[in-house]
Length: 158
Image 1 (cartoon, rainbow, N blue to C red):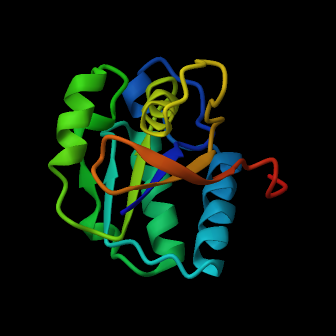
Image 2 (cartoon, helix red, strand yellow; image 1 turned 180 degrees about the horizontal axis):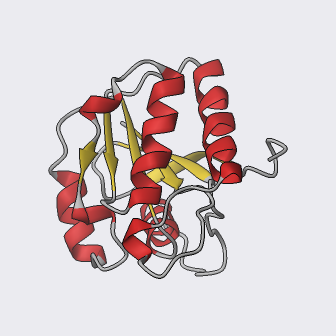
């Protein structure tokens, strides 16, 4: 299984953190990342997002552009919130149905920590996902994996 850890793209400022929507730049970051994935012929079998608006919007844009999984099939899960501890996340991850390509859209710092844990990287500063950043990890058991690629919006020119 390949897990695509995508941090939500840039969002507008706001008092209600959970309701913060993507900015115009964030929508563009999401579209460009989706174009990269679509160009690589990546077909998502499943997609999960944190319930926060900016994460959900990022996932919906990516799924819409990629066109391989209807955005209506996006599942909203608390497991992708920062408040979910590592043990809870690992249990959730191991319980996912069998799939080849899974999109996971969440937040910093937990998303980077999940990637580092899977690839056995102990240095907390060794890998951090910027807004709109993507890390693909290949795993067989959801406990350990191999980093296949890491892409930032800056690399894509946004």
